[in-house]
Length: 64
Image (cartoon, rainbow, N blue to C red):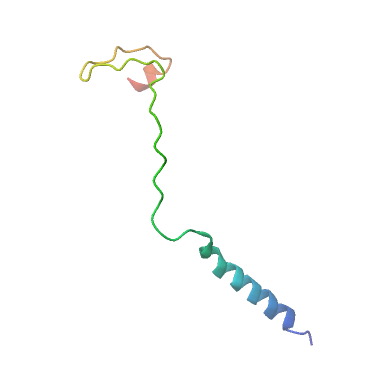
């Protein structure tokens, strides 16, 4: 008859590994992102409410 010790050790290690996985996270509130300067990259903001002109695309026949 085979010994059950290796099977019991394997099951115990598997259960211990499964129980340790939830401990990997950090408990508590999320940290706020650092304040960074917002740069537009030289883009000029448009006026709200004005429609943007349509640029033709190769997919237009499929969409319209």
